[in-house]
Image 1 (cartoon, rainbow, N blue to C red):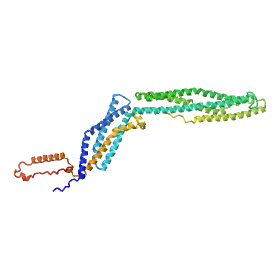
Image 2: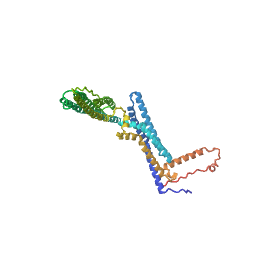
Image 3: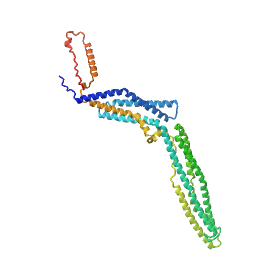
Image 4: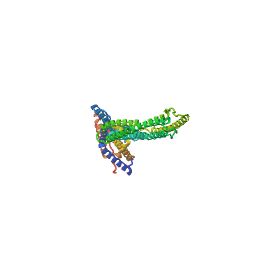
Length: 437
């Protein structure tokens, strides 16, 4: 007597649901491997383009090396995700799933390291190099403008020098008419004042000669910057443009250095320090002791004024010298792969596409895992014979008949025929019909 309880309605619905999902998986299995292979090959192609951009030599050996690397990447991606598609959905324990999930994460990191960044280089390598050129142009422009600003500020010291020179010339004229020391003529006081005004006039002339040099250097620098900007957007291979860009960058760096050297701030500072320190005092030439005393007092006053003017001029020069210098800018050529990493924030879509083509199978793994879990949940509580399909039952009956025939064929031929029916009872197969769901 069969004491097995028949399936209830919920179990029957779960079995039907599981069979439906299995049917979908069977259909999806027919092309899943092909789709995974296409993704792996596509990733390998972009990897080849990325590797080719890193190799300096374009010979046969370099091409072979790039092909070998891209093939290895394609095979590795296909094998890795094939393992995950088969094993991860099949495991049931939480520990096993956690272990495989960790392995999948580690494998994904390895795929990104060996393939995705090269794919991104193939997708956006040229644009990233152009971005590097544009950033370099901005850096050079800032350095050029800063050097020019400092040079102009130093040239502005010419007005300070002229003001001090003019004050000494005015004092000398007063001394010549007798309005300074009370002794008209060109005596000792007059010669001291003229000595310093001549020194300042020479310094002023020297500063004036620098003005056209500063203007010429700045104009030439702007011309070089214009050419460098044009190179960043010109059509054609970016490698060839990078070579000319590097040449222009060297020229511009030289002009920036020249502008820094044209600054006369340090020259004015030294001249201001020498202005009061290097005074050649002439011999007092007045005819009387009283007049010589007056000359000495006037010269002392002139020296005090001279020290004040020198201090003012020195502070003005030091203010220019204290200005922050232009930043040191050096153009460093980069490959397309390095540029993609360096400016990754500007090429997020390209990075997303490069990573997605490699890690898209991870979504398929999760889908299969969820589906297999749903199939197991649908069969939960149902007996094995209740989950068999008609085709599986027929196959089982066929196997049992073949086993029965094989057993009968291997019996001992010398056994009495009359005893055969009693010695070998007939095997019976009981089949429980499936209930319609």
